[in-house]
Amino acid sequence: MKLKITTIGNSAGVILPKELLARLRVDKGDELYAVETPDGIRLSAYDPELAAQMEMAEQVMRNRRDLLRKLAQ
Figure: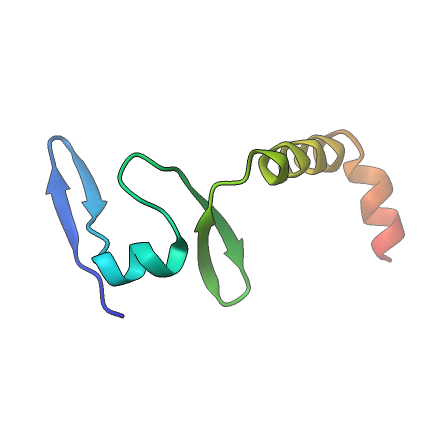
């Protein structure tokens, strides 16, 4: 599905067609979660529990960078 970036006030945005909103199971006013993957960006319905887990993982990665680098070797 091809989407176009448009100007919204002083920002840029993407208008999602009704079909895509239905597939994502979201509606106007809902939040989406964007996750970077090796294939690009994945959009999904916002999940507060997943958001909390991702924040915790990012905090651990920041605080334990040296340990994680050694484990990766």
